[in-house]
Image (cartoon, rainbow, N blue to C red; front, side, top):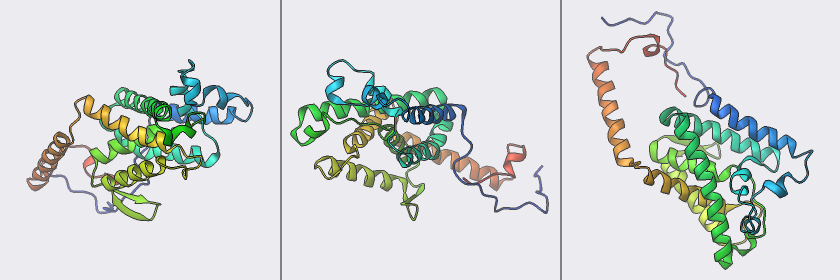
Length: 247
């Protein structure tokens, strides 16, 4: 039997963002905020735990992980944590918490490794070898890549104004990171780390058997099944069929 929604039901129910924060994302954000505040008291925090390729090669390998949790200023941490929520929420919902956290940290570490390797071997990146890099941007770029592969046509507001498909958004960011890493005009922004996050994310997704084609087929079949259920008036039951929110 097909349920009839109540008369006062509104079909234009919206909510901002991808949904509430999970416990995993809350923990990640809490650690980042706590270390950001600790940096005002502990002046050596960035020097010891920030990513400096020359230090890593001398044995401070922990920097490949810890640099992800340090940020330089309020705008830096706000932007990264906002991106973590906006893109990480849906990826965690799709993959599960354990797989999401594994991907996030491996991509972040991979971005750090790429920064160390490239700054050590290539003259154009020599200035980065003795420069300290901090921030979750490498891991965030890895999340952007995964989001672009899984939701290629999902619109993203570039500069919060221009809507473009996620796949093109990721391509543009990758091109910017590549071009900026080939010269010194990048300033304090670690474009090598951004590019490394994209590359590490792609390698990991391909390495664990992820296939964009399989994902597309899966989502197409789900769309066909949902369309068939609606056509024949078949619903899985529960309030969620009539009270959905568009994020």
